[in-house]
Length: 71
Image 1 (cartoon, rainbow, N blue to C red):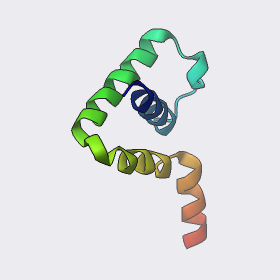
Image 2 (image 1 turned 90 degrees about the vertical axis):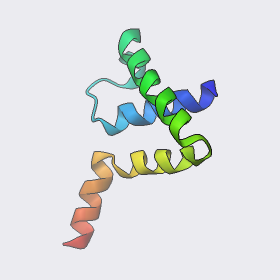
Image 3 (image 1 turned 45 degrees about the vertical axis):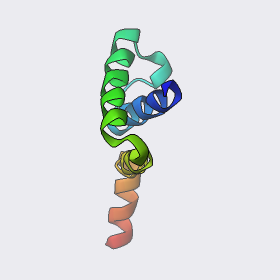
Image 4 (image 1 turned 180 degrees about the horizontal axis):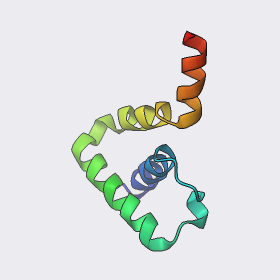
């Protein structure tokens, strides 16, 4: 469970366009993202892969490339 929470916390952090890389974030901010992740893991349980995929798809670079491809 801890590994899932950490993966989801990092994915949420990345998707929110954070200025600092994960490793540079203060521990209190990391704990906040971990709490969001614990809630998501509890709610989604087996479907956590869907959340990770959605968060990865929501990263800024991915959206920009998709818009350019559509144009």
